[in-house]
Picture 1 (cartoon, rainbow, N blue to C red):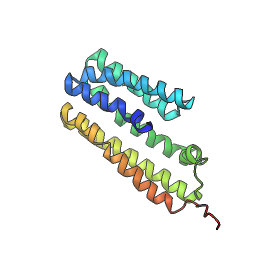
Picture 2: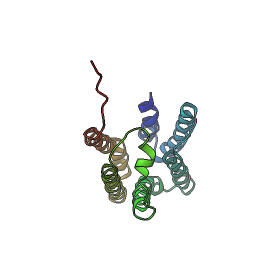
Picture 3: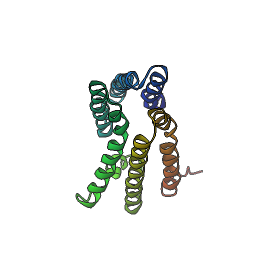
Picture 4: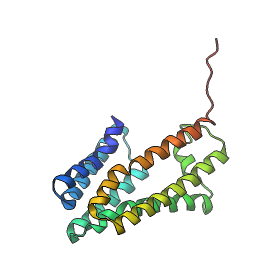
Amino acid sequence: MKILIDFFPILLFFGAYKAYDIYIGTGVLMAATLIQMGLIYTLDRKLTVMHKITLALILVFGTLTLVLHDERFIKWKPTVLYAAMAIGLALAVWVWKKNFLKLLLGSQMELPDPVWMRLNMVWVVYCVFMSLINAYVAAYYSTEAWVNFKLWGYAFPLVFIVAQGFYISRYLKTDEPKA
């Protein structure tokens, strides 16, 4: 169920774009994201900071796209989101001496501090990579190519998260059942 909630805005955006155009797709994305956040809030009784940032960026960049009738805004939203994430994670460690990943996920899993630091830095690099690749596709390819990249580009985060899972699994403590 959660995976469906996570992906339905992008799937609806893709469908609306293919059936109509980028502007209808953008409106559908905005509405679907509002519904998505409502569902998440209903289920979890809260929205994470990332949810709030994503919603704000979609609404701001989507509104600019629709009001100014300029598709560049919605195409640059992922670049801004990933860049903000990279900057936030990097500043947290280097300036405030806080590891946001550990703060967010530390209650769910226990890992040594050096592992948390490596994970944080890998996320910074990943976010920079995703920001740059989206910027490149948005700037140098057609809207059609960018929309296809957005849909099929979800392979990047899936591969990244699976790889992180393999890395983390080496450090997780398991409770062996006693016979």
